[in-house]
Length: 196
Image (cartoon, rainbow, N blue to C red):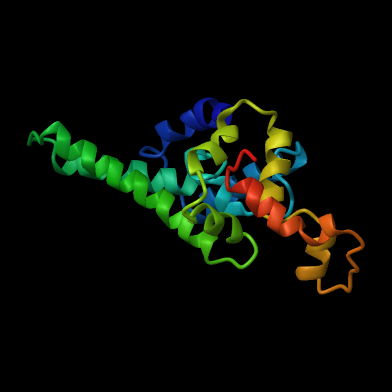
């Protein structure tokens, strides 16, 4: 994801203020990016899309959304042109930049949290016993993108397991072993960052 953000996407930032982009065109670029990630098995087909754009330290994949980046750059250019003559203190500008960047991540996180299936993982991380730093540390540990995509899909509970077929698909499943019955509890326990 870092390579996409730093190499491929850096070109896009320079042309945002020059070419008049339509939002639907930017959404198509985001869609094509997700399709390419899916083709190269870096994104599970049933994985949550919003989580792809949440930063890694917050439990997402950290990809930059083209539409959001366009809006940010456009607002930044507009702000610069409006206040070109005046000199604002660096602290105020830094605060505004942090506020805009932070609000985008919070909006994406809220979108994920309200979902029934994909929202389970963020809700688990909000529990007091969950260590979010340790839990999300693996997202910055240079795993292969394919492996990272599979693990995120498993956390999103989007992998077609027997529990998924029973709970989401509504199929009648019989749990033969105690470990199968407790799978959901074990996954929640593992996600919470417990070392035991």
